[in-house]
Image 1 (cartoon, rainbow, N blue to C red):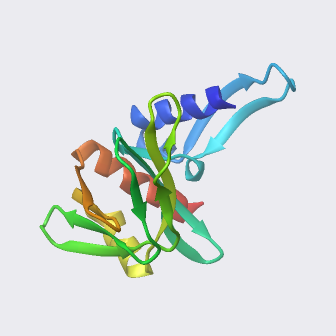
Image 2 (image 1 turned 90 degrees about the horizontal axis):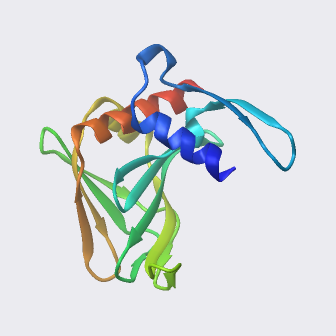
Length: 169
């Protein structure tokens, strides 16, 4: 399964033509079960915005949100209600509230990184704005301090593409 997910991340990160942007063909046989994976949809994928942050666009139970997996060298806590600030290319700043807590206070793995996954609540207006505008920078506001990251234009475009795929699923 890890190999399939890696292959799908690779397919998304290298870019896909517009007509097939939401479909990834995979022809992989699971050695243990014998099951073959042929097609996976983009809503199950995430965009790696920088080396530390993965974003997944999600639509569940009539609601849009972003699921973030953040991995940092230092401990952090993203309390429910804290915000992610997103600077768009026109320098407008959108503030999005965390709807779940992200607890990255304990080190994990051999690298001793601190990881947390949390969801960010998006109104339909915010979803449309993010889907149609490029993101330039982001700032995660933690219980103590913050983490800034710059978003490359190609990563911003992939996030927009993923949001469109989820919306059309």
